[in-house]
Image 1 (cartoon, one colour):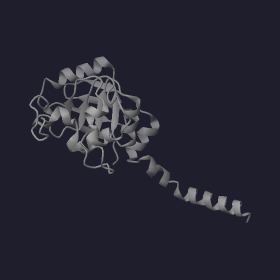
Image 2: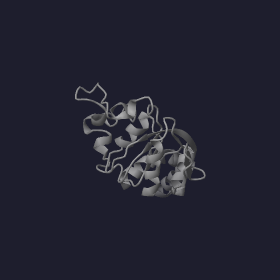
Image 3: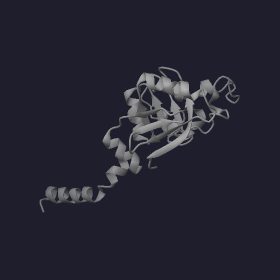
Image 4: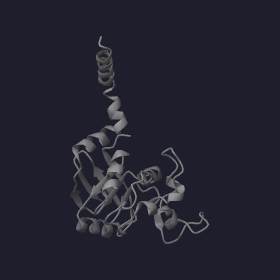
Length: 201
């Protein structure tokens, strides 16, 4: 799905070194499709041992934070294993943008490949966003991928960097398979030419 602009509610997760096993525990990785992982997002933080009762100290499913589309994180978000299930679970739950002080490199790239916009911001800027979020039950952040700017409902404005290749891919709603298919005609022509060459025709 193409992404350019988003204004939405924010879930603050002010923790450093959130790893992929905390995002989606390994016992839920048996599915081969990308859908259905959202229900297990942050499983051990969200649920009691019975797997059904929501913990009171993790507010992701509460009124203020329900339906959040942006996640605000700390340092080294997405560290650990390289599993793509982590961005799949975040996306399936409804997150479209993740803002953090820093990301694990593989997780950062997996987000981009799966249509999630990861935004790196300076530590003091992220700290200010965490502080602003506490001020209002109606707190929101607005993100423009085209202008590479974001602003929050408290008036904070910040710019962010994104690789031009991935910016185009996100704005057009393409993944790498879609991109390859755009060159289907040229690939077919090359294969026919190669076949002719091999046969000596």
